[in-house]
Image 1 (cartoon, rainbow, N blue to C red):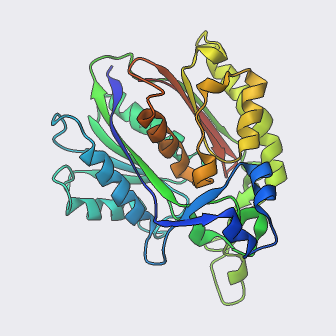
Image 2 (tube, rainbow, N blue to C red):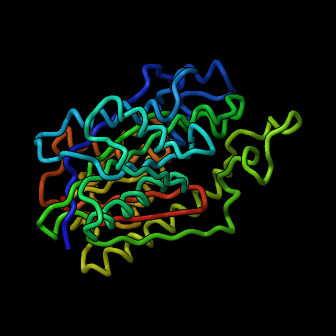
Image 3 (cartoon, rainbow, N blue to C red):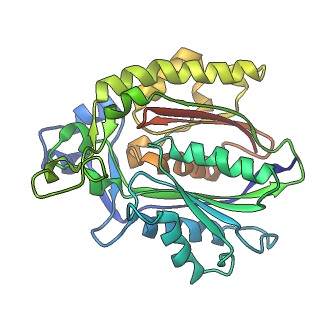
Length: 332
């Protein structure tokens, strides 16, 4: 069995920044209220002409340009995690494939493509999928992207949701490594479909196709208090299970990379598990909740800041719509 290494990583953020003070002019809220309850100060918003595949393209090219070796001669598969796809059909990964094919010789007609569409957990689900495919020997190099233009699915008059979300993209190039101890060590995942309507978009799928009468329901809906109550207990319980299974204690992990949903949730998880503050890196204040893009964006900045190195243990953790959750124990 092969190991898996992160050969390169890249991110991309739109140019428009929306601050809490900007939101004060749009809805009944304040900078103080948003900051205290979410930890968010700013979020990036894509322009009207930019789609999820466009952000994914820029993040992917950033990762390709950051490759430090020429050992990669092709990418075998593109996996794109998103909740704001360009289209219902085809997969946004296929659209990204077409755009990348004209930009780099690493992409060919033999490069496969697929989407993972499972709430804010999607990138961590996709990380497990990509790693397993490489460890099995089926593929050698996989481009894994988390990309969102989730702001296009937001009702900017709904202050319970619009204060939270931002756009962005992050990408990993995952490659096989002869050292089988690298990469995915273990993971646990789960979902509770009875709670699907805690975070969902009522209109747009085949259950309720859009028409002239229901367009006001085409935006993302969230029952924030219920999501908070579930996440604050479920996530630490599942992390504890994963660590215990591998004979690890919370502070044996060099760095935790949490989905950036709400700083109070992250702080609650840390307190529950007794995680030391220097073992967690957050950037929710700068970017808000970028959904499936948050984990790669956080990890990119952690690497840039020298918070982890080869051989370190990292734990990736996310939860989101579905209601889904996933934790990954990873060795760099």
